[in-house]
Image 1: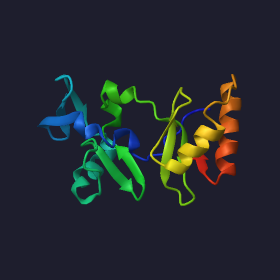
Image 2 (image 1 turned 60 degrees about the horizontal axis):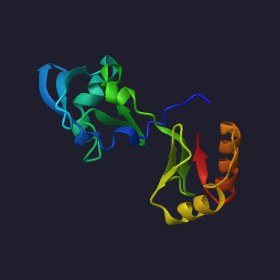
Image 3 (image 1 turned 30 degrees about the vertical axis):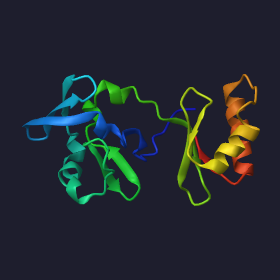
Image 4 (image 1 turned 120 degrees about the vertical axis):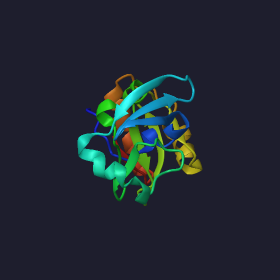
Length: 160
């Protein structure tokens, strides 16, 4: 299955702890640094996202998010330097399965290439541990379908 970005912004919601703007070298061109390694590189705001980036002060962003993450519309959060984004960002692999509660809130995810659930929701954790965690199915697509069936049967919605 081909991954389709859901534009939820979770991938970059804590990257503000790692990526910092060191200098605006020319308008909309930035020298950034990784706080963890000291490495520096250049990024440029994508031409089609310049107005969005310049107006970002008026948008709601997560306090620890990447400084280039902006809310394009309600619930649609995008990277404004996607074309020149750092290698660290390019290597990010989103989720394999995103689990939503009945109201559509994101409450858990199974990361790409894994069978491990990340969640803080106790009810979802109980269902996972009881019905999914120890299932031994070699075929990945069959495992995903089984996981989907269990979660839907227990009142969750999923996005793959």
